[in-house]
Image (cartoon, rainbow, N blue to C red):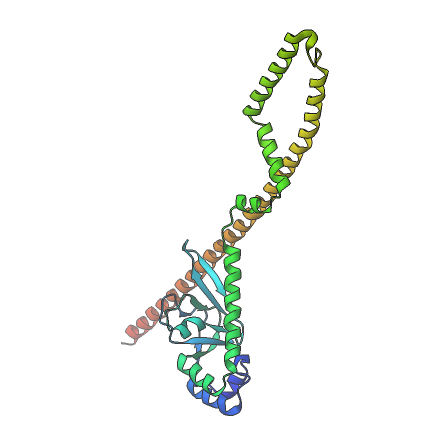
Length: 286
């Protein structure tokens, strides 16, 4: 359907154009209408046109390496979708579906070239739209990136935290127990054998002092490590929560697709019933 100049003026992207340029662009572009749940283009389709939203709602999605549908954008009035593929003249990397009655302006490479020749500054507005989509994609990647809880914890650990964990790890090992037992036996045996010449005779007062100092230092270090364990559990819980949110979103997407399939089946069933009714009426007339 042909586009009117008045309709183009309502789009922020073309608001800078004067009357003559708007009229020229209106002769080149066309308006397309899409029904609810109608696919505008799918992943891999040739990118002959990009679209500018005028009315309605569109979901732009792609598929990740896990074959999960990922929401890329929900363009608002005046915003582009399918723009990058159109400029590069490459197949679409996304799928666009109209969620309700939608009206868009279809724009081709030739239309953009003619516009830029007459109004170069309009290119800045288009670049702004592309940059917004690019930033949205970056944010999407950051949100969906699978983060290893151990990597996150290691990155946040300070030097003191690493020492505390190492001390607690060594203090709770059989290596420490065996070495400590050997040192106690050797120390006590040596002082018993030396008798009067012993530097710490029975009841080993100096040894008790060392053990008390060791316990006084080791206890808070172990408590520090336990606090670190609480932090680790909190980080793991937050990451699990993010994973659960993604799982919930994917389940909702599947439910929405099932509802759409149910509606489509219902529409097909209604059409078949109407067709059968028409055929029956025709047979009765004959």
